[in-house]
Length: 305
Length: 259
Image (cartoon, rainbow over all chains, first blue to last red; front, side):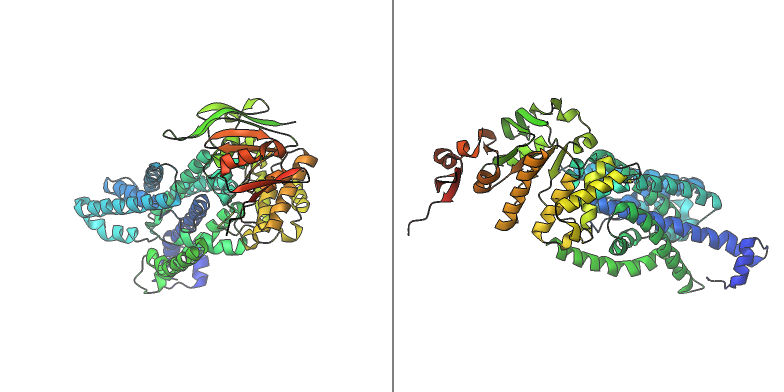
């Protein structure tokens, strides 16, 4: 399904290696795009589950904590200075890591880290990075030709340039997911807060570092592949918790799978809603996710009070 | 036999010391009640005993070893702390909460051994939580939640149990049930139990020793009969109390206001 209609039988033929136009569209355009969506949605879902557990806040995700903004800034800088596409995910990971460290330092300034200070620092960093990205976009002559594509990318669109970019992103995601699965069960101990986690035998500093590194890897790869895709990391873990419970050893992998499914479907919608033109997938997730986020906000206020 | 000892411990913030030269010990089989007015430093002392707060001077030792040299995982297998606030936000079941007590012993991906599962099952049945095991903890009553969180701490299988106001938010019946449970854990299973308590009468009825903290210093430390004397209670908590004796235990009652 997409701007060009291809029959199911041709899809199978294409995957089996037929050489006609349909085969090229499926193999070189749509299959990488579906795999890219799997990586992006899965990464955002798993990163959201980790951050929500660590911060004990259902409103946390790589977006709100500024991680995605740092990744996007680094990715744009990488494109501006002409880094080859396959290495953009690595640059984005670097940006995500820098953002994570910066936010945590800012949040610790006033003494103990609180959820509120982390979220505020994330918002500050997001607007600052957003400003810099705009500045780069407008001032760089090199970018003039790519401006439209870049703007589309920033709004969140799964645009996989090449198989090699996909391969690098897969490795980054695999590393992030492995780290996430190693640390997941320790996040359960945060059920009553950081201090109780410590008395249960969890080293808070070490666990925080592991979670931040994992979310930086995951969010970095996701941003490199798809720009800023909102709400998946926020909504997917929360919806899943309702069905499978709060245990992170289950929730983190389930959020990866759930996020992958959601983004593949959202990308499909992005391609067919106004076909032959395309919407950025970020527009779809934003349209569906924003009302969900508001509902969460209202509910969490009721619970908190 | 286990002994948790704080020796001349001072702790707090650079600008303001909360604890000044406190010495206290809790040994196997004892239920020690930590009492004192608001702001005396009771919770801070408990955090120091739990290894959560590093003393600025003095030392806390567990069977002779400095608490600060033990790793979080090692310490969690020896000293369990019952958290005061038990709002979980996420929908954990009672069994999942109790299983958190095994965190320090789990395998690399958080895999539980047969022994881990057996301990969780045993603690759940000991505290009569069997029928609640699959229920969400945020849907339980205050007393049931208290028991679930206590079960979590017991699943750590430590020799020391520390509690910060375990009876807060509980009705009088559940307060007594909780203290009775703590007393039997100390007496029958040989746990060293130390609890911050506000209710002097509960302390008098159940504690083997009472330690009184006032303004960051330990004022007195002894059996309920030694500690709960009129002069001492009035000096620390104010004049509005009378002391009466009942079955060999002192009871503190408010003076009836003159109308």
